[in-house]
Length: 173
Image (cartoon, rainbow, N blue to C red; front, top):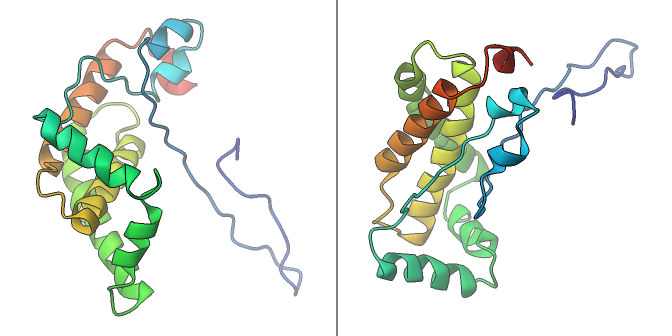
């Protein structure tokens, strides 16, 4: 996991298997700034978004609706999400829709980010968050989910984080 790529392994006929790669993204909430603990790790500053004073819902009613939906699924959304996924003709249809959503979000996000360091990598992570939000919106009929607003907020915070980066060396670490 630490390298973001799989180990080199041989196939049955002695050739090399394709190397798999991945990137992990983390979302964390806290009452205290995570950056206050990262002062000596500028490379992490380039990879973490922090949302200060963010109001994610427009009313207490929306917030309660989300909380109730989660609690009525034993704190886990997966069972209801799986029920929704099984409404597709096949799992391949679901995957195709997911890939289409990813492409739909990735392009505009890349444009929004412009020439910032690591724009492509950041755009992939933001697109995945938006795909997840879009799927949840569809599965739970959360019409109040404003995906564009979520996208704009993440992009805004990304640009703010980058502008406050301690040094250019953060982007190279």
